[in-house]
Length: 513
Image (cartoon, rainbow, N blue to C red):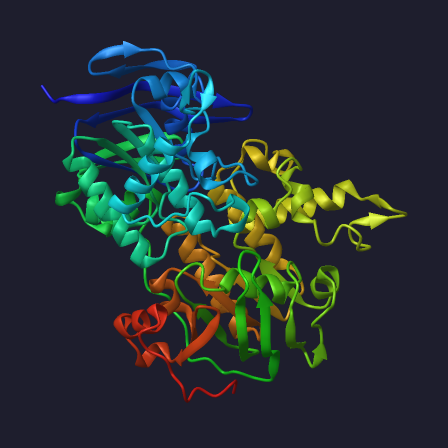
């Protein structure tokens, strides 16, 4: 008999309008890394939330070490040694890293909080797993990638034996992903059992022992990873063959759309500039990508470019006009679309409906408004069109509260809204973060089509495969500066890595073409 540490047997979980998990059985062996694969909205996160006590299933049982257990809340799960790194971070922005990690498990003596031992344990774990986290930094001041590491440390701090990773690499750099893969292997070797939700087939092939595939809430099968291929996994996941290569013709750049001259952005957490003296341009009919390790100024630069953050010096020109200090609405209404890095903070109003989010930047236009009132029928029709075109899945369609949707479908909603607007520049930051291979294939095709129709695309991505496949030009950012400009046809991942780490610098790079 197999030594199963966790068994989820015939689990069914329903929400209004949708059966998220339909009679699913998942069995986790002791000391294995078990991948959970499925399209956006297939029910993966819901199933793991049932195991972690965030949801109660309508049917089915959960067993630990062969004995049936009742998990009614996360405290029950923690008591059973189950920990979870959530796809959308469970962090308090105004708390420090240390306070977030110990929250709910605060060390105390005679009723008084004692942080010294906790700090030492966190620093030891941080050093052991090469997570490099400053325990005194505020969550609101650190990058998305660093916040992900805090989530991992929260779980390790609690000494959990069953570890659930929900899309843990979605915001990590390739180097950080490699480190995480090593961490996961080490944890499994120590006897911990890992459930690993991911859309990235390469990661499954690298670290997983077995893989369970879900599709539209139903169980498709469980396979030994050593006995399968990426193509077979993707076909099981989406029900059809998926093309991994991006089909695109040679770029034919036209007139200049965006020009950035000597832009500097002050740091919020130290005296130096986060962005220093950045200059480049983007023309219609080309895809220019800013590549770099997370936390090297990309977030601050895009904030200054889109109006979310202040620019301290320099000039930004769009279609020949100086927009350096123009408002966000001005930029939106004059042809700039933006898929933001943080979909919850800057992309959506989570407690609005899907249809309301679809017209967030256009509600005041005559198409959707009359005498100051929203034309609800027109809003609904527009939303339904985008939902169908971009395959945005949710329980109640346009009426769905966005907070209840899966992360991947939230991302598809933002992309649908931004791509459908009348624009000359599309700024896409991590556009395929959290998307399955079928959705990535579609989004890449749409981006290339927009380029071919004369749109200028500024892409910011941590996915080197995406950078190499989509870009016509690559700008590498390191410590807030553009240190190199390369042609993806004439470079290698190794050379790109040298630029990204700061080991190589193109001193002769022209400020912009």
